[in-house]
Amino acid sequence: MIEHLPITVVAISLLSAFTILLSGIFSRRAGYYISLGTISIQLILSLFILDYVTKNGAIRYWLGGWRPPWGIEYATDELGAYTLFVVLFFSLVATIYAKKVVEKEIEEYKIPYFYTLWQLLVSGMCGVAVTGDLFNLFVFMEIASLSGYTLIAMAGKRALVASYNYLILGTVGISFYLLGTAFLYAATGTLNMLDAKILLSLLYENKVVHAAFVFYFVGLAIKMALFPLHFWQPDAYEYSPSAVTVLISTAMAKINAYALIRIIFSVFTVEFLERFAVVWELVAYVASAAIILGSVFAIMQRSLKRMLAYSSISHVGYIVLAMSFLNTKWGISAAVAHLLNHSLMKATLFMVACGFVYKANARRIEDVEGLGRKMPLSAAAFTIAAISMIGIPPTVGFVTKLYIILASLETGKLGFIAVMIASSLLSLVYFWRVIEALYMKGNHEKVEKDELPALMLYPALVLAVLCVLVGVFWLAEGVRFLEDVARVLGVVK
Amino acid sequence: MDIVEVFLARYNYWSFVVLMLIGLYGAIAYGNLVKKIIGLSVFQTAIFLLFISLADVGKDIERTLGLKSGTAPIVWEKGIEEGYIYVNPVPHVLVLTGIVVAAATLALALALMIRIYREYGTLEEEEIKELME
Image (cartoon, rainbow over all chains, first blue to last red; front, side, top):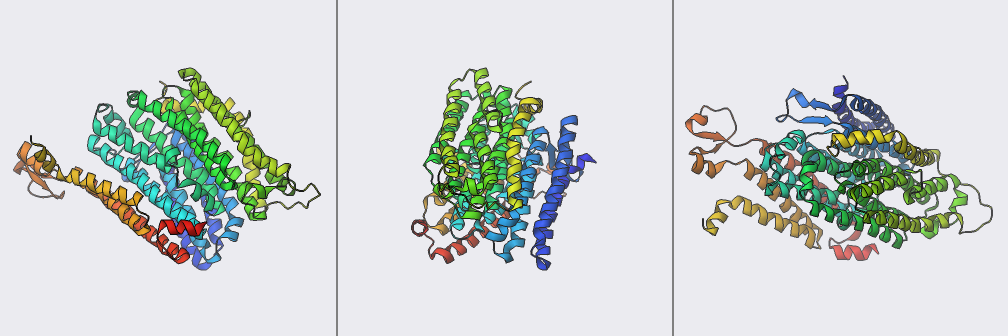
């Protein structure tokens, strides 16, 4: 029975999208509740999958009973099930958060369409997490991307241009991915990831395979906004509707990172990558540049949402840097843990930042002056997440940095410890400005408390608490799970 | 073998490379939003051409194995015994899906362009940037 769950998660999500569209004829408000219900069910199913997979190993589901490599296969291993859970958890939190903001920011007649696309975006992301087929991954990624572009454009004027630029670069990125798939198919004659892994082991010297790898890497680097290819990202995050910012900055950004980890470790394997140690060192330097420069750009911003967008570029650098320590379990552990960690922190920060826009129309950092007194709970959530971003123990931000430092100690690449420390200090600079504005500037007279509505406040508070709890979890119990993932991906024997 | 001969023997792959570069240049370099989309479409179509080239068993098979060039992948009385061979159907199926995705992207881009034109009254990137300030 459990074996059928990966396909069920995707299927009910797609069906729900059409149900929302039809329900829009009768009621404009029904879409929110249908979406909320579907994502809750999906989350519960993903928990069952995660539980089953950690005990019994990967679920391999053959669509229509056609055996791989001819048929399409859904291969959900520890990493896939974990990513599915992360994506659905943040989709659920973002959906709860969405109700009030969407009612304020989107015209009423568009609301059913909004939730239809929202649900399609979630379907696409779930599909990417469960599939074991290279071409299927492309199709699901396009479902997610196309609904993402449309959702961003719903905010109107400026968002239209941001969405258009995202569409151009996103399509170029995904086309590079398709090109990589074409080259891989030319070399191996298969699209199944597990099959390709076996067949590729004979072809590591083949030039076509090298070209395929480069196209995959560049394509997915554009999609996940790795530093020199990030141009679409700040505008897209800043101008999109608040709820969409929360969803795409957490779940959507992570699904692209997941696809990169999946391709690099499950299809090309560590043995292939070790032959190109020089290239991989270069990737580590690019990622370090992303970490440092992302923070520097963040310091230069005056808009709060844009500052957080640039800090996301810095954190994409963390994931890629963590992947570049090929042979140690700490590297991949940091990358996998950061999929959840960064989402936790960034979701809290964006929820509160969008809440400031919702309540006080405060877009710039100097506009939030004194809001620490007016909205104490939201400001507290923001502060906890900011502390986590800086990396003070035992928060989630600290865990990632700890794992990366352990990885660099184990591999002897000590320079990256300096990068970690520098990035912590730079994060301190840009978050301190906001915390200072929240609590220390502005008028000190008694002000009326004017908190966010409960549906927007509580998700942010829960995530802020989780920033600390999950940090403790990774340090205590989570290590064993990360070791399992490292073993499944072939990083440790 | 003569260089020209090498070039001509793989003309479909070369045209893929040329079309892809034209498309990529068009999508990145032009300031006009319509031209960007045209470039993007050329780029995507070039990738489909590559997929189709991979499936084709055409002239090479005639020269090396003495088989007749590829036929449609359907059940047919003439098989490999009579010297006929099928074209690989998988890339065609992939391209079919790819074309649907490309059409959806194009439709969305055109819809966005109409909205941008209504808001800003222009489709030149520079002018839109000025109006956004």
